[in-house]
Image (cartoon, rainbow, N blue to C red):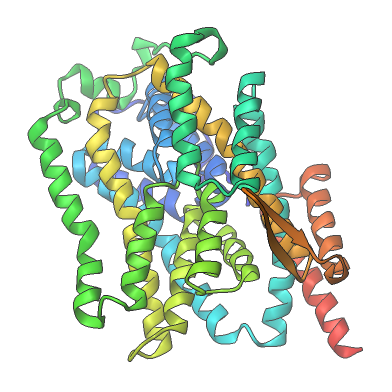
Length: 467
């Protein structure tokens, strides 16, 4: 779904000296409820609201914060909101901005996951999800084009993307190793051949029209941005306790082998390797959830991503969908729906707590590293590798959408996904092609493409049932 600025831009706005916390809450809540369209749309909307319209933060500082958030595991748009909220109103500002970015999507996904778990077997619901899967494949392909256009500006970056794809698709190299290797390659490679890596862009700030944060800095009101060993220790202890608390309580109440503890541990791990956003780690999550834990079937991961696309907030909220279904199907002594809600809550908790940890711990140090070339080179290499990882995701999804059966074969170290040609679903293939045509040729937009695909899937499935 394409994002638009909530309010039209105003010419020559009066830049305030500071932003009242209550006003910041209202703006962050508005952004949270309207944050459709994935990270690109969310970041664009924040840029329009905070840089262009309200002048809360200048362009250079916004891009610097964004670069850091892109280097981190986790949803960069949510972390960017947390970073800017922290700059303006310290810790409470960061917590408020980050939470308000997630809460609307959390409750939306919770409702959709409950409907999916309880009523998916109804023909009309099944038919709607049949169409959504095809649209999601088009969305992932569009993500490859969008990110690739930005990241693959040199032959070297194209090579990094290609190596990442081959490593993860054909040799099953763990996703975290691919990302860490790319970052290390960028950091070290720039020292050997600086000209091969893009330099960070610096945009000068016009002092006459300084942003709110620039004015605060001039008055010495950004002392909380200075690094502090005591502050870092406080963040590590507090965030660490908050992070493990629900897992410990689940182990105490339901046993160490319960699905709630498994979810807490598994999604804590994925939270620290989710470089590049939801698309890049989704294949890793899907393979573990399907093959290792047997929480859901391959096609259901596509359903979850389709639901995440229809709700505001970070696309990584698809993990909430997985957490709900896993607990709903392994409830223990709890009612299935209650178990699903608890599983979704624990999953979301351990997914986003690290986001606040990384911002509050690292942001004070990153503020002193604007235009650092080594950091930018590492970021560029990671972003290029993410393109290869998303290509892996697109092919993995495409095989499971278009073919009913896909076998895994191993030839020495080579890992192959081989579709059974006789299991091809021509209707799904046609729907996926139409969805891509709608997005790439006619620029129909995410929301309309999802709605049209769901409607076509509904019509097709009901026609088959009636015949």
